[in-house]
Length: 139
Image 1 (cartoon, helix red, strand yellow):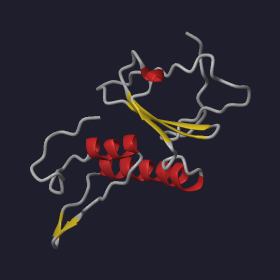
Image 2 (cartoon, one colour):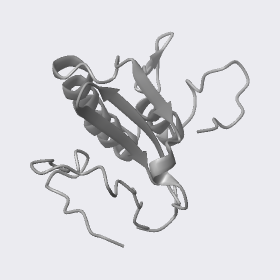
Image 3 (cartoon, one colour):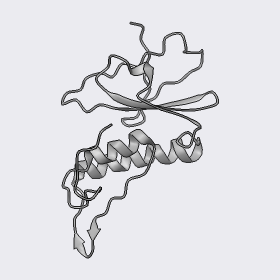
Image 4 (cartoon, one colour):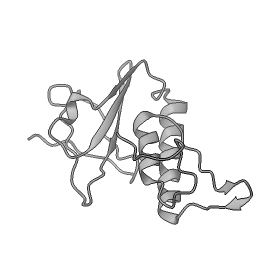
């Protein structure tokens, strides 16, 4: 996931942190919400604050409890996403896999994840961002 260009490698004065938060999510790393810049208030907009809250919750669980974000098998742009409009990364530890998917399209396009032939009985698919279970479909 390519970051937009910035002067000094950070966007502390930016009013839109979406791409930076999603890049941190995609790479399984943190994001610093620097809202007080040397005594000047530069709060996050509500949309970015909610995005960061959800991403941080996912990362705390997947990285903290399940240890998936420090997994030895990290693969950005995995082959399972070929032909889709989204971006993603796969984190694998033993029999557990996490696909961190990002849709930067201006619409609600579906991101197709091809796991045909790899799905075992008892596997669960979850939408950790919106909450709820996903149901795999054959194509």
